[in-house]
Image 1 (tube, rainbow, N blue to C red):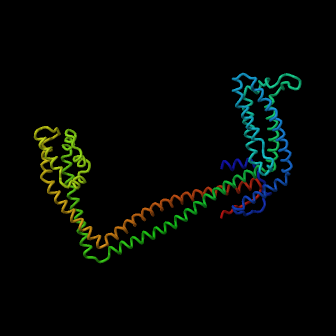
Image 2: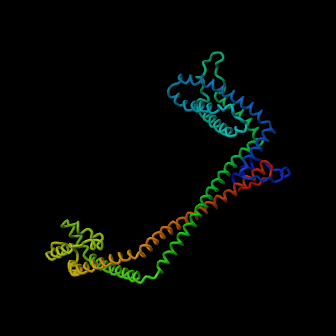
Length: 427
């Protein structure tokens, strides 16, 4: 609402009886509509002729200042080095301003708007720097005192800048009174609305593509679910028996794994002490890190030798651990149980391999497994896409709300500034 209040101030009071009938303009035609309004204002207030006079006078003032400035730059060498350094940045700013003020000869009043504000800002900035500089009152070094080259009462740079400023201010006031400035402001709002609309349509197109992709994924998920259900319901007594056998073997293997883990948890401290004092790490460390995996990989069950050695060291009091009595009992338990557990594990493992090979031979397990993998993949994609769509919908709602506000603001600006009722249609 801050911008609208500024517009109210800029566009002054509205006269309701001057409003025309409501016009309806599409967003695509809004720039053309505004171009017509600008052309009407330019013609009504003869801004073309006024701009030609202003442009000619502006370039004349620029050439005068440029010629004087060249002579002043040559005088800088007469100053002490410290004074030169202090004044150099200001002179660089003046040179930059003169370069900027050299507007293209092809410029028209319609295209001048983008320069007008910059000229005002740079002039004000430069005037402020001159007024705050010691140079504003100490400029005698520019003159030699001869006839025609005597020091004026006012700093010559300041005087020339004030002349340019007065010329610029007069023409800017002409533009303001004609309503041209209002139209330039409206044009900037049109550009903003068009950019917003373009961004909204991009989101809409992406959202449409994602919805299509979402439907495709839903179809694939439903297809894979149906396929898996159909395969699972197929009569296959041999397959079902093998599947039950596989599940039983897995449970038995898990039971052995739990027993192994309990056994090695009880002797963890003594194995750790053994590695520190005797440096045996290759065989022991895997048991310390992942005892079940190490147990399965230890085909010769070489860990039994290490455990026996640990027991002998404990009995000889050559291995220091807390609660050695409990540790000895745990070692005895391991030595009594591990060989039996290892044999059971090898037997179960071989049986498991046979069952898996038979299931693969029947083909049903493989097909269900492949379909399940694809189902998981499609489901993950579906969930991710649903999240993206939710985010896109939020973005589109925000853009839509912003567009509505900008549209209403623009229509109010037209009503206040141009005394016209306008409806902008976005499609």
